[in-house]
Length: 123
Ligand code: FES
Image 1 (cartoon, rainbow, N blue to C red):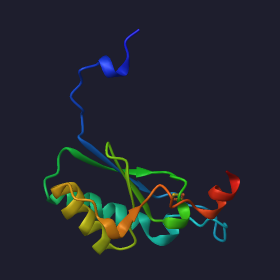
Image 2: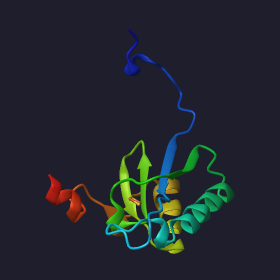
Image 3: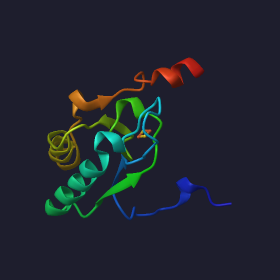
Image 4: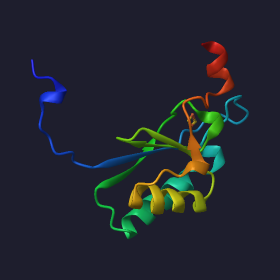
């Protein structure tokens, strides 16, 4: 059996940016990223990445990433870095610093210990 690590593949994209655009019914206790403007923000980042010529970066729409309370939520792979991005200025900073310069945007960072209360009480 071939193991994944044995494959010598060149990735089709270097980076995937997953932007949650999940929508829930109004009044849901966890809320959702879409009610906080995530569709507009995701489309904005996608346009800006294209304008910047980031051909090796894919801006993906994602369903719920299970950190709804911090939304709109973005996670970038392969780094596995999570952000809470609420404005176009936040997305500009993700683009210009993380995606173009490889810097972590500390002020937007979601750390592993940032666990929604619902998930924390379930564990
Ligand atoms: S709705 Fe976006 S993380 Fe759950």
